[in-house]
Image 1 (tube, rainbow over the protein chains, first blue to last red):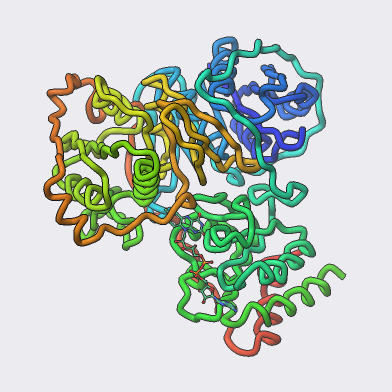
Image 2 (image 1 turned 30 degrees about the horizontal axis):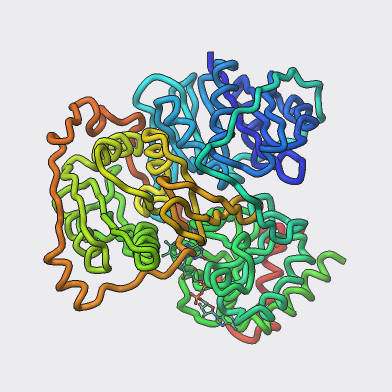
Length: 320
Length: 252
Ligand SMILES: Cc1cc2nc3c(=O)[nH]c(=O)nc-3n(C[C@H](O)[C@H](O)[C@H](O)COP(=O)(O)OP(=O)(O)OC[C@H]3O[C@@H](n4cnc5c(N)ncnc54)[C@H](O)[C@@H]3O)c2cc1C
């Protein structure tokens, strides 16, 4: 019988929305799901996963799991898999998921499909769609041999359903050694109480057109007033105007919010690949030929330094 | 791989070959640049390794012109039929009996955008992996410190060598080959290896050796034509916002 093991993700002690999306999708397909929950001081979250439908939650809770590391996480997922007899493993295509998905698959001697944006499931026959070539084409894929299905799924594709916690049926995993050849020293956390890019329904992004750090700070209040995540192009992050975690695009975060505001962003393919799935795109750029206008629903040809104050004023009126 | 900066056409479930131009995947160029910087700093040698049809040799020559010391070309005409799993298995074979301290590659290939091969290879040859690095420091013969762009910040990781690293494009700006580099590349060793000599049986090749299969390529959904607003920002922004609210239910 088809059974899905979902690798849960945690931020600041709470289950992330991208994980809830996977559970909601499993439920909508009438599939049985279980969860593997890894981290430090995370056991309390098992009830949230049970509320989402996880029939069993496999827990690895240890101080050594505070920061993601490939070896321990791979061993723990495999341990959970062996106990669960799940036929599929689902992860999100976060930075953790991208690192873990191929390693888990290879250790089980099977292949994987990564960064999937559409999934059709008929028992363990799977048809998956995944963008490729900087989103200039889409691959329709299948698993060609029998065995475990390992799949990573892009955030924001399925909608997450809020559910009440429920008492969880838990299994405690024993904590394996880390890789003897690797030592994770620390995670340098940048400002962290902001709205995360892949959890936001509105994103306001700054491009090189903002001109510098002051330009970023000129735009940021618009994001704050909208309760939006603050994104950026690579040009902005590489210049050090904003930390890398703000980067939207193929090497940043792939996003698909309801509303995306691109301010002073030209619309290079690698940026478009990361945000052209947004429901509505608004662009401000002083160059009428900027490629961003090819994907924008509302394209404002003009100076962002003049447009942002008007945007803020209008938002102020709407918010009353 | 095909240059994805150019137009990509999809027809009858396949990518149209005509008009494609073949280049080194951009993330792999970043990996090569990092390798060159490391050897310039602590000494050593950079070897390029690729699996692919005859035309892949052009990319190897380009990498040699950038400064790599030698290259290995595993000749494989049906490379397109293989998935990441099959590639990782062939790479494992190609690496058997060779010496290396560090394997560097792009975080994903620009054509498949899959990002699976390097960690699979790492697992098959039992090496530690660090993916998506944006910086490195403290390179020695025994170890390297890597800064990985993780989900909640930059993860700082010490890795003993040998190991496998995949790079994010923010790591560096790859150098261009100089005229002198291009001349010198012609004399650098380029080893050609036939798949047969690697003892790779038929069941490891192409579709047979793959665990996943691309049934067909499709065109991505195109966005409907939008509206543009030109003129004084005080007016255009208001017009756009009015429509954003009435048509698209912004902040509704
Ligand atoms: C392998 C690879 C991966 C990459 N990954 C990413 C990625 O993940 N994300 C990403 O963003 N990029 C990525 N890039 C880089 C990408 O190719 C572009 O270089 C980058 O997106 C450009 O950023 P930008 O649009 O801010 O800057 P520019 O291209 O310089 O555009 C600035 C724009 O601002 C406009 N402008 C200037 N002043 C004003 C003003 N006052 N008012 C309004 N408009 C103004 C200009 O008209 C221009 O269009 C990648 C590149 C490679 C090779």
